[in-house]
Image (cartoon, rainbow, N blue to C red; front, top):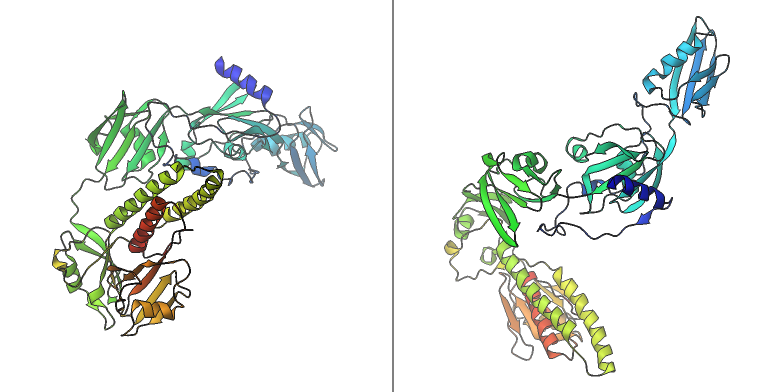
Length: 534
């Protein structure tokens, strides 16, 4: 009864113009799904790829309706060709034959029916071909949890996907992909589960009529899936629970997965439990819970990238416990290989560098947003400065550290154990020194034995007006960083080194100046990038 009343209200208030709907996500409070960061299974299909197409194709089960256009061709003893529109009584009028009733007739019976009618006038030698030339245009209401509720035009043979796409698609986290009703005369005549299309590519043929309603029901049950699966999405359940085995056909665990962990929340307490994969048919997963699949095997090898000036493959596999010395001892170098400046880039180090930068950025953002002012003039200055600092924070967040492990000549390479995903670069012998940052003409210069930092900067036009002369970085070819103050004695530069000149921070707030300076230093060291603050 409630659904009938709801449909009546929809029909009363829906107009010919679509209405933009902005609804917050509505996951039950018991659910702890990370719905903002993870995609919902199926949401990728409504991106405008269906709405521009029309399903004008042969459908043998299509029932002929008023307004359809039928093309008839006669040849033999009598020749005739014409297009006829099915009138309001469901008939077409064929010259010398008369009325032929077609309303409700299936498409597959069209030619036979016309042929039988013609035989009443022409006994022999008249041949018939009949075809539906154009289906009836219709308008269908699309309502419920879609982005643009409204009335949409199409053909009676168009699929439900086209009409939903015309309505902007299903609202993320609100609408159901598995419980979609098609109503006619206020009665549900069909229920659609779009997961069948997503999994098998199958859409049931359905003939819409003018005034039909497609109603996207609210979604009720979700689970989140992660780990060693090919589809790490949030999935919808038809009921409040299902077995893990039942949902595995959606999830597609990777062949190596042999266990899973089920996370539940009850009375604000999180509990987790591990299971073997062969227990999947006995374990139930409920609305709001989380599944994570694992490949719990002991892996005895790791993948390494070996780049730069060497002879051999780039991607190699080595045994766990292999050291950098062991790897390099088996590497074939070229006469141009600069072995003493070998570089090691590690993902775990890059992650730590990223976290350190983000911590500083959060602290800086908090200071900017909480700094007060005593006068209106000072407040205006602080507002403009805050905008610049916040823009700097956004740019700094986008910088990705390299994760370089600095290796000095005195280090024992046989004590540096390689990790999965390590990237080792054998640099090519270089006779170039790169100068970048706050100099007037950033450039790459030929190496000179007797040149100091100051001489290289002079060749590049000297310091710019924004240069922080106390923050000049000399990055050695092996990644080692030396900080230099231009008022001190200038060190010699080696071939392959880089000189980074950081910028000054124009702020009256000492704490903000200090924070930005530290962040610029961390970015320059971690990512070898000179980022301008303002």
